[in-house]
Image 1 (tube, rainbow, N blue to C red):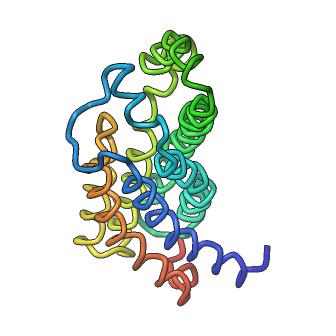
Image 2: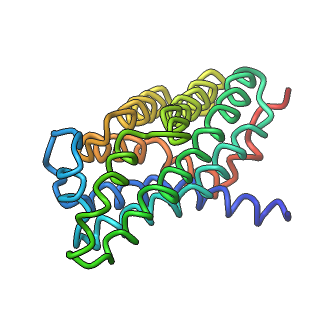
Length: 218
């Protein structure tokens, strides 16, 4: 890929994915609630006849390619310090991003299909919803979703170590990523996405201005 095109795509990725995540979280029907969705009834209340809920999950799903591209671009930076953090974060974060795509694609977007079932038949899918809620079978792999914020946080630590990210931006981004690691409380996730924006949006603007060419060579 042409270096100029690569720079533009990288910058746009940094700018876009925190905004997409925030928009997706804010589309939750009960955004101000701090309650954990621990029952089928609560899950149904969240997604039944809630188009914005499904659209929000679609946005988070579509943000995954931008997340993966961002992680990959940081892993290729030539830096004198922090390289191991960038590479390790890329590995962990990419696995987490793949799991996020699976979580939103295989689970959350499936709920939009369930939402089309007529009321007379909808009551029959209770066991299926319970299995999804309890992450039965191979859904257990989604317990590893925290690899994404952990990996991304490692990369931000690497950027700070390399002197390519201001400490307050890196700390804001890391705290925001840690807040995403919560039991699906969208208000907390929204605050996390805002804090991530303080870090990744300036990083995206800097990238568009030539950030990759300004790194230190090894």
